[in-house]
Image 1 (cartoon, protein in one colour):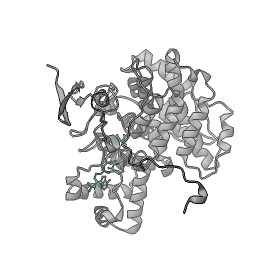
Image 2 (cartoon, rainbow, N blue to C red; image 1 turned 45 degrees about the vertical axis):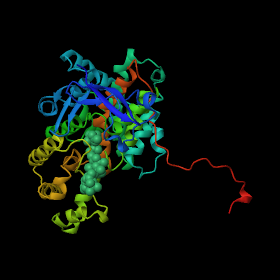
Image 3 (spheres, helix red, strand yellow; image 1 turned 30 degrees about the vertical axis):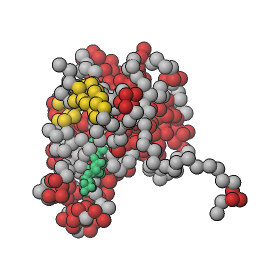
Image 4 (cartoon, rainbow, N blue to C red; image 1 turned 135 degrees about the horizontal axis):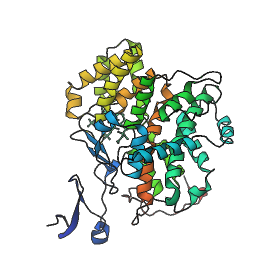
Length: 429
Ligand code: SDX
């Protein structure tokens, strides 16, 4: 028997259907609410509002579960690669060996930017934030592919997806090189995704940088763990822009802008800046936590808390383990990792964090890995954006190919002035 929801308004009872997802999530379908009642809903931050049905990623925030197309993140982290996971997210299933080879070849064939793109880099000041460059240059790259602007791109979607996924990495590396006044290093055919990124970041025209297998694996895993996360702020932005019929590259450029914020993908940069501040002050973390608990300080424990996870973010658990493994293999230590671990231990035993169900999220430890790889802090959100690209592409496709798709256009409750009339300027006081 299909369940319904009843809403009583002004003495009348209205019924609305209940939608149940494949993981038994329940939603009240309010598509007829305004037509039937004249009312709309209000939900600041959309904390209780589902914007769509999606088949890409499942999160159970209470249990700390994350699955890409049904496969647990722990299994993918252990056995898969970023490019295989990208195919899984975008195409909806794991590839055969031949399909993976073809997709990987497509990435290699599309890794170069149009040579004229170099002139765009010249226009940015040296201190331009790489996220600003990334967003601008993704849109610029799209200008070289007029086929992008066709309404129906299904017949060459895989090539356009591969082009965006491959070139976001080249643009990011070029942005870093430009900021350091270094010559661009072009990708090499023999290097796979993460290795080619490190090559383009750290090689020199006269000699290739050393690509340590543990460093390449750590970066590939970081990309994989960031690949998708259902309706987060930046992915919802990509879907919003896709719903207007804008092209794939324009949607990705919008996603970069949303991700940049310190409450979202910019948090990995904010975490390291927070840990460095604590380290410089000689505080063992306890004084900082007292500041955080004092609301008037305006401080937050960056890398902690999540709109959906009210349990440990499964990605944070994997990344924390990877920090220890990578530093051990590199024969290094990092005082910031020790501070982060002390902060986590203290916070997880502190009533303030316990009652608000605040746990480490994906950003709390990821910066430690990026530091160990020699990636500068202002590039941390860029690493997040590269990793999230397959998710954005998959969500773009889900919106673009939805036959019932409608433009996203939320309502509002107006609280501004009621009817006013124009007052000529010489009558204003
Ligand atoms: C990402 O949505 C996704 O899936 C995002 C993401 C992805 O993969 O796409 O997982 C990636 O963005 C992870 C989050 C990265 N951001 C940070 O680490 C920044 C620090 N965290 C927060 O600012 C906060 O936790 C958010 C933004 C992540 C979530 O904010 P919410 O859900 O709007 O929660 P809230 O701000 O309403 O906080 C609820 C309470 C408040 O206290 P009270 O008013 O109830 O007393 O918890 C407190 C907040 O003050 N709180 C924190 C805190 N986070 C929430 N207090 C101290 N430190 C924190 N980090």
